[in-house]
Amino acid sequence: MTDTATTDTTTTTAVSVRDAAKVFPSKAGDVTALDGIDLTVDVGEFVSLIGPSGCGKSTLLRLIADLDSATSGTVEVFGKPAHRARRDQDYGIAFQQAGLLPWRTVAANIALPLEIHGVGAAERKARVAELADLVGLSDFADRHPDQLSGGMQQRVAIARALAERPRLLLMDEPFGALDEMTRERMQAELSRIAAETGAAVVFVTHSIPEAVFLSDRVVVMSPRPGRITDVIETGFGTDVTRDDTLRETPAFFAMVTAVREALHGTPAPAARGAEER
View 1 (cartoon, helix red, strand yellow):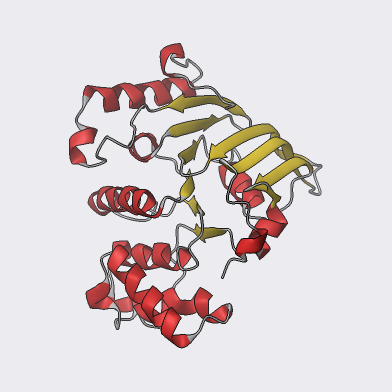
View 2: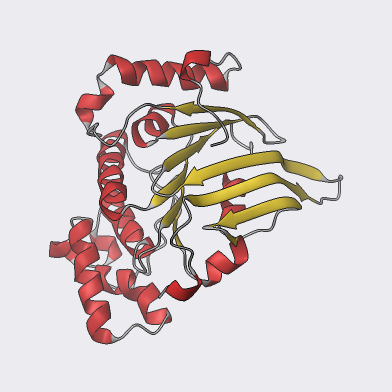
């Protein structure tokens, strides 16, 4: 479990990236994946990263997760260097593939991080039951992954990412392999889960409507070398219910248009948010 003695619970910043760059060496010469990245994500905020393929969205997420290191610049999570935040289990992470262990049940997959970190059996059982209920899978706790739909498998992956009560979720196209109807249901589920847990979310996606539906802010990135070219505030506060009704509103369509224009290099100034807080 997270060592609360090492976690700064007073900070209002979940993620702080300052002048970060990432260069990958290759036989043909160095490849600059990211350059001059400045990004702040507040506690409890939902931020999506969007841009063309190869723009460095996933690379930026990996820097935040300490799965890779910045060539220059700094990356902090809750006021701590990314490597320390990883050791302290300050974040959960989910990828496009659920990555469930096929020989384990739903309950056992959710429990895996708790087992690894030595949580006692009684506490582990209670936490798994709580998470299964949160993601709507209480009736499937004894099933195995091959008995679940793709959307249900992703719910298990989200529950597992939340097992140690992280204040930050890092998500790399978690719904990218799902059909459109399931994807929209999962977006609504994720919005509900984020609201109920209070976790900040950094979410990588190629889908403009998905980014707008889920996010407080949408961060637009350029083709490689990846830079942040625009940050658009959706204007959908906590009083707005994220469901199918939202998708039919003029405000939603306006935000989709604003993000699309920003991606194509013609941002709409009225919709643009401040990159720095």
